[in-house]
Amino acid sequence: MKCRHFFVTWDPKSPRGCRAYGFKTKQMPSVIVKRSSGHPCFQFSSKVGDKK
Image (cartoon, rainbow, N blue to C red):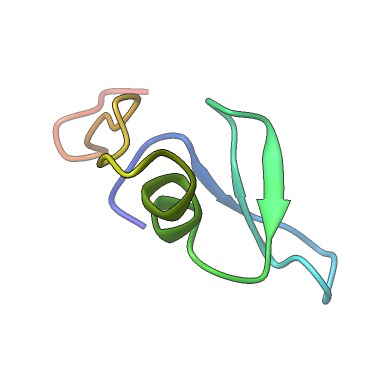
């Protein structure tokens, strides 16, 4: 939730998404990326300090 690529969807089956990788999921996207690659997400970018 602290990543600027994270978003919430209207889809009750996939309420969370990642704009960087372009997917929606029921679980937290960071968990899916870690499980799939074995590494923490390399696309993480903090929302803190984001002026947009």
